[in-house]
Image 1 (spheres, rainbow, N blue to C red):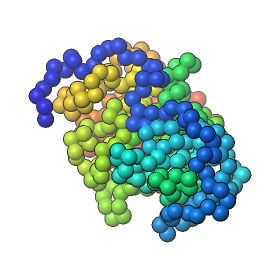
Image 2: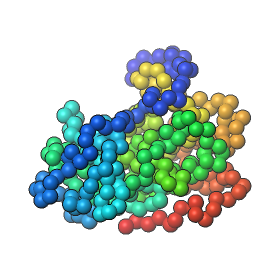
Image 3: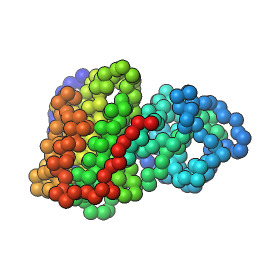
Image 4: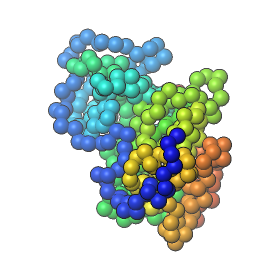
Length: 348
């Protein structure tokens, strides 16, 4: 551990809610590659296959039609496409010459939620452990198309701030999705507004599972060893920074920062990355709970939940299901309509 640094150096107050300045593990930038450039011709030989447990989601390449690029990041490029006549999002995982292991882990991480079905989790439709036309790629994933808008864009865009009803509604959707993932022994490990899609009907869907980890059968779902340190440093739980085992409570910490962003419309931190990381661990540094959390209805309703969810010790944080119960108390007096409620979730 380095020598202590004065805490006043860590956080300059010139926080800016600019979309271009968001800290991101895989920054979304418009891809310049031509649609369809990596798809095979009919009858192309497959270079790799999925294990038997994932044989149900093998890609039928003849049914794939690429429409347009949506974006690209550190580990992949995403395209809007059609598959078996349905509009989908197709992700080509990039080969990474500097860190091939991380690139492969990103592909398999995306498949951790492949067998799970929930209205607030992006669904995997099909996958392949290869990418015809790019033999160095770890694979291709076809997911449901939930639109191209993210919660990050909604928070920091030019539109009005989220009111209490929307803040609580979105918070409930994300907590509901997390609760389901944790019951399925999946820890996301990179929850943030940029990885939450806003689907038609104003529904939040958790996506981008490239950093996720599935807990082994028979293993305590509250504890597992982290294989690699991924994710976004501004949302990473302090116990992971210390090298301690992964718990589902790491997602709860990231959830608190995400909800804080919805209310504040600020970025969590600016300044030197290493200083921020050290301050989070050594000084329990957190984004500032300012006057906005007392003077606004949304801030007042969510303040206590945020503070409990980013508690320093994982065991002191509530579980996702408990967060959901507390959010029920924060909900608007006017109940949401039946169409806005989540349908029952199921494992398949």
